[in-house]
Length: 376
Image (cartoon, rainbow, N blue to C red; front, top):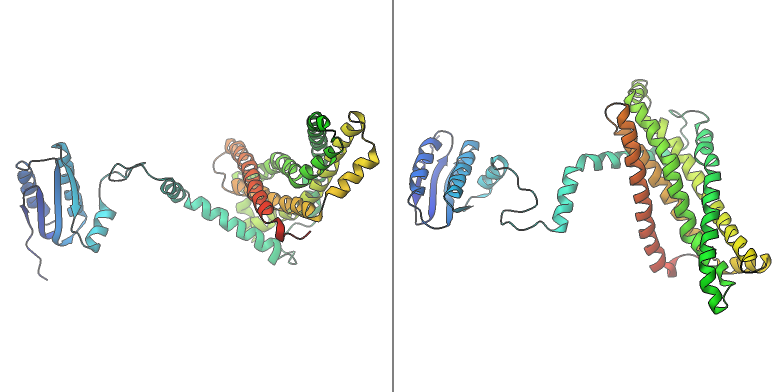
């Protein structure tokens, strides 16, 4: 096998390399290059690799040293002329530290570039979330009739914990929300003699937005934190490893019953939240605005359409699935000791509430602009 004779020459402010720039030849090439650099004038140095036939990791490191030496003399070095294989070698084995926030020309990274960099650093987390999402929906829907690997009676137990036990706080907050919304809007509506329309406002607001959103935020803080802490404790105490050793899938054994329970109870809690919120507005309407019960109820019934109810129920299901998946995700990725359980729970609640509000914004836009195609 024959190798090209390696040389380096100077053409004004340009270093021209030819032949094989490898470990065998870099010692001489480096000395010749440093000697040539002493006679180069200007603030830019071009490194021409069009004549290079082969380069290895040592050659890539030598070019880094030449570029650094040029920078120390006040020159900016740029490499061009390399073919695809040599360019790939330089990119993979360059010893220069990776730049952060700016590219080679000093330009600030664009918004999309920063998003790509963030996603690249979190690719493993994203894959784990996708795997958990896929497993949950697979065992939750495809294997819904397969009871193997699930605890008997756990669905009922989780339904009581997530749904029934959350009813008092959801009912109280919903009543206060409807009460305050009606009180604040009453002062404005009375100026125009439109007292009765407080029923319209509260009915639509509670059905489309406040009912599903308030319920989801309360469930995320109450039940989502509980799910995360339970799973995180199981991970820290190696209970999930014990389940795997017994041939049980932790997602099917732990997450799926909670998935079923929150899917069943969240729409029910949302409906109760809407009713109780409207009742809170009725209290204000009757005691403060002098609106009789029957006209208030008739106004609520007349203003609501099926689209409003469907919108609220769809939102409640989406919020429920987000809460349980995010809670399980942060629980399963807990590492370390008991202190990490609390940290994972905090992250889970914050992420769940953010995801719920973000999803509510997206769904609100979809239902608003697509209302002509929604079934009435």
